[in-house]
Length: 117
Length: 132
Image (cartoon, rainbow over all chains, first blue to last red; front, top):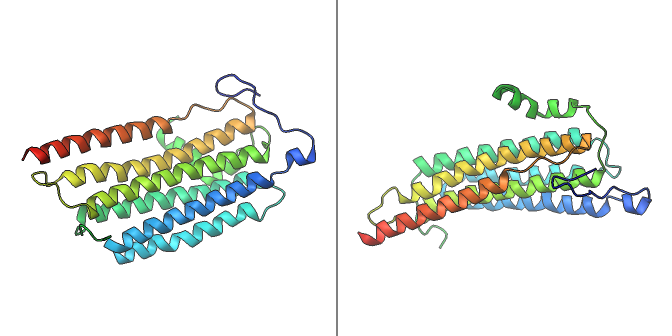
């Protein structure tokens, strides 16, 4: 198997330890946690300027953290593509929805310079 | 491929029904997922930066729309980045399944163009504001 630049991509070996996805799974779970924290941080910021929108975005944080638990709770690594597509599609739709909310606040909302002071 | 068919191919059901190739090593699948999540956080950072600029910065003297000129494109590009990241995740996953070379990513180009464009707009707004 070759990569985009033509170099050899390392093939997974037959050895069980080499095939163990433990650390990759852990890194992915942490990545989901960081994404949930990012949603929480954005929700906190929006909360300062629009309470309802901020609460909606804040409520997404535990949902995303929960979605990330699917990665952690599937030790065999089966059914990843189908589950991944649904979860990742949800994340994408959430970010677009958050962007639309923020765009509406940015255009129509009352600005509060120095609100984070 | 028309735009509607391209969008339909990105829906989770269409991705799940794609039976071409074989299931890649789980570590590659996880790495692809982490890359998508990293780009999603970058998209969120752009959105929060845009909102912060519009809502929290004091107005630029002499440039009443300066904050919107800087913030609104960042928010829009955040949404664009999120959708593109998902499309690239689907393409990468399909390439992994078929054992094909990974497609070239356009996301770094979009991000570089966004940062450069924002920096130029910020410099222009600041110069106009300082001159008045």
